[in-house]
Image 1 (tube, rainbow, N blue to C red):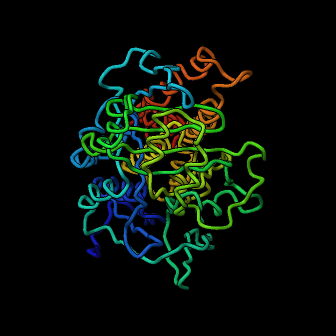
Image 2 (image 1 turned 45 degrees about the vertical axis):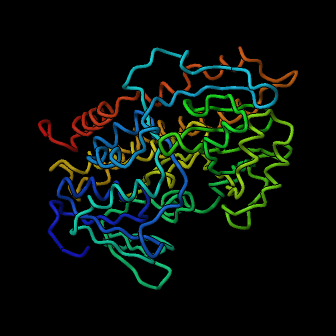
Length: 432
């Protein structure tokens, strides 16, 4: 990937991070004739093999970025269905607690998908043109602004790279974020929640007498300090299980995870966590023989995603708990708006900072709203089933409509608002 085709812009772009958002950004910019260089800390483009949910808003963003068809082509048919969640009790007989299908009138436009991160990259990588330069084993350690106004990126191998615009897509441990908000206080924190992930054959669950609709629905088994997400994948042959457990005896942020954030754990640890739950959960847990344990971290809401000519996208800007399945979708919304604003001929080096401020004005409050809702959803899902805790009607009161502001957001309206503001401020001409 080294063909130095000229860019249509008078400024250079460097994308720090080659994950889902970084690659999507590079592809979208290339489609607009804008060349970017991607700097990835790993030896190659790669993603940890966890599944992610993409709501209808995320799919609209991917369509706008020009990569939706490629993603859908590699998406399992069982994961192209409506993702409205059915909440059932974890302990006991798994009685229905709340069906999100009853929350609103849903149409095909409200459908979402689930996809594995490696499958996403496999779909999108062929869309990356040779004109996009990719650099590997480049772990960013700092970014500084030179007297000329140019951004200087420093890497762990001792090399540097000068550019005009830095797009930080380097995840929750982002070093580009430090250049935006500083390092005076700790920005990300352990949420006191862990997630055990694993796959279970559907036939095995049927043989075990599982009657919950894990072959048809996105299920959320709720309880006290624990909940489990289960849904079908691989054409309904497997069930993806994510079992969450939270330690509420300590305050969020008071515990620091000093080891790896993802590790293999003994099966018995998982069995012990859910030993008092109902039959169907016990069956799923029984056959998660080699679970991986994920320590869930999240950001405190940032006051800005932009400083000068540095802009954050994705988890670098708003890493959130996965309890609404909306984190990656917010990253794609970031990338969509940023690329749309960088595309017009009116966007030049001379007004780049004003354009980035318009991006920040729209994206920061929206992404932080979703972050805060994700925290709240986790609390609700782990507050059911005990005297003094939430009843089914109280659960409904907290959950009804929780996804609508996320799923039904007007992305094109965001762009129109940003352009209107830039025109009103004289940054863009009245006719653009």
